[in-house]
Amino acid sequence: YAGLAGNRVVCIDLASASNVWTYSADDCASFSAPAVDGARVVVGGRDGRLHCLQCSDGQLLWTFTTRAAVEAAPVICGETVLCASTDGCLSAVNLATGEAVWTRDLGSPLHASPAVADGLIIAASEAGVLYALGDKLFVKEGPYIVNIPPGVPHSFQNLDDEVAELVVIFPSNVWEYD
Image (cartoon, rainbow, N blue to C red; front, side, top):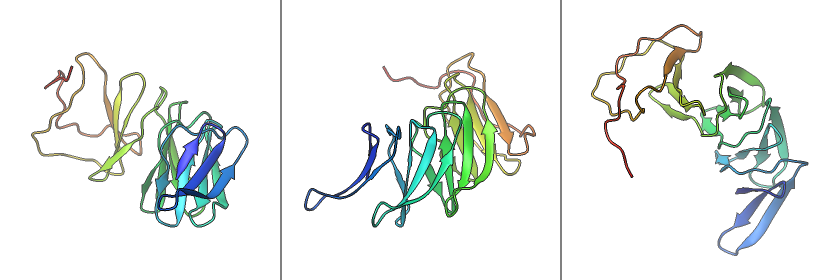
């Protein structure tokens, strides 16, 4: 599966190098990798929408509209799709229905896919802010290596916008790669 700049999403059979199906939509150019769960393929578009397609035939199942382009690959987590958009919003979308579960405005464009680990959603904004969102207060045992340049602000919050206890974060680089 691949999203293409020509407003198309394609399914290619690698064994025969043939096109199985093509989905087209106005202004849905996609520069991110699709997320696939076996039955569905979800791709973000520069049209400000997530497009969820049936893997077998490319039929559109639903779209979810954001306020800006979706350049980062969506992430499927169980029955939820995480979507980062260039308006700074991180959204959780029901994979079956395409309905919003929640949306958080992080205040600065999001160009990278969120990561999910240990019940936390980690997202980094264009402003250099690293966010860890979870549905409960979290405490992590260390040591961890976190590469955040000195002076870059960071924010850790739970989904209720309550400040979460931050246990391990280093204010300077532990290592760099040139």
